[in-house]
Amino acid sequence: MTADMIVNEAALTGVLQASEQARDQAQALLLLTDQVKDGSSSAELQNEIAKQQKSLFTSISYLRGLHRTACVSARETKSRTLEARQEVDRLHLQLQNLYYEQRHLQGEISACESYDHKYQKLPLIPVEEFLAQHAAHADDDEDELMAARIDHERTERECLEQQRQELLKRKQKLIADNKRRKDDLANLDQDLEKFIDAAKPIMELFEKAP
Image (tube, rainbow, N blue to C red):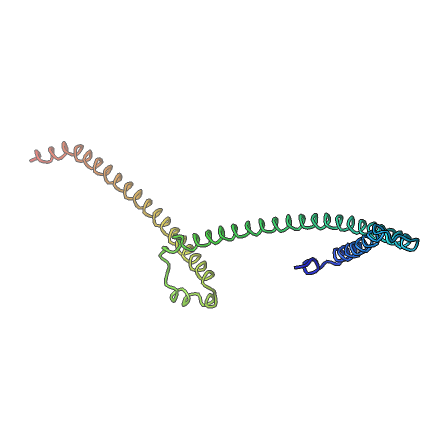
């Protein structure tokens, strides 16, 4: 697999083309210098060698510029890649936190759904009986209907508690009245006994009279 098949970025492709051109120029220059070594040197050959050297130096200078540009581009790409990787890592961590929070919330929801709520054990009146008494709640959903039934139960219990308090007051009043009457009867018994004791001498006189 050649470099042309691997590299597809325009900037790097230009570097490869420039390097290939410089290589070809260097090989051509080597061929010319080999002719000089063989003793076939001439003014025309020297001029051609000088021309090829100048062209090669120009290509090498151009290649160096491309190389510097490619290095700068590579550093910038590396920096952008690092920033993008950090952003991906941050988003991945944020996603993991969201997954954790989701699992936590799902656990809390499951715990709430399976919780043995006390309101489920309240002795509420049957739904049919409640709706028969409160037709306005016929279109309520399950939660609204349960809240209305609980509120109805609270109201009923408050009324019963008020009645109980009133009956308790009446009971205490009756107890107080009974105690007062008992005390009155006890006092009456004492007064009657005193009256009888006081009347005994008189009765005895009547008994002795002819």
